[in-house]
Image 1 (cartoon, helix red, strand yellow):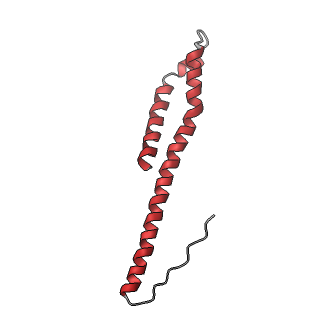
Image 2 (cartoon, rainbow, N blue to C red):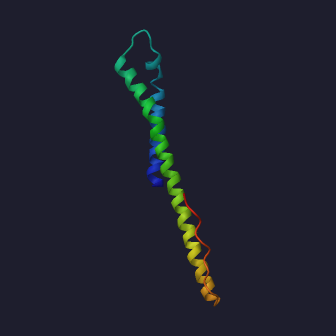
Image 3 (tube, rainbow, N blue to C red):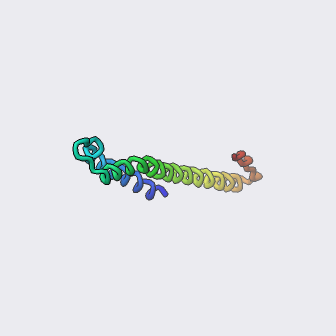
Length: 97
């Protein structure tokens, strides 16, 4: 997920950079080409959502990595308790929404 999110963010930055070179098409009043103006405006419409999806995938991947690290620490804590001969006691899982 992190790689896909990173690819989406990078491709969104490239699309935004290429689209910024077409800014004259948006402000051109002398010879309005409505098709290119519509293309420019449609890219401006869907691009923020596209980049937001990429950032969401990156943050979801980070959350999954942190959750797997915490789960592994919980297991290793039980192994340490067993090696010390103590009763294995896990704290309760936190409540989730």
